[in-house]
Length: 176
Image (cartoon, rainbow, N blue to C red; front, side, top):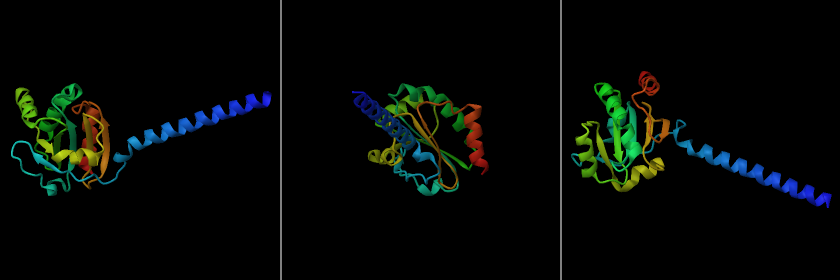
């Protein structure tokens, strides 16, 4: 009887240890994308002109890629800070902002941006290809890419892109 209790206790411990290892490995995989690997190719077009993005525009630049939607309340929360960052770095030739609609209507999003005086670039994800390549899990989701094309940061959820911490990180990438 005592031996049976020990066997059950040992089995329970092994089960929970395995569960902890599984959860930890899943958590690690969530951030795999932003560990310096080269960024996936974008397959997007300008929402205003319909022109496909010329990927040569990305070379040698720090690229801010943000997936968002006009129906997304957390996206709307971070929009003022994205606009502030965009206006601050607009004249910096080493910085490029790319905001991409995620499962949203381009006209609805453009109308929303116009109503709030947002001027940052707006792109449409061709058939959701870029979102799939980046492994987007929901919106908002933001990626920072260095001048060599390596993913340096992935932020899931809204962020204050006008904060001193965010700007310091981007400035570090710009100075590399």
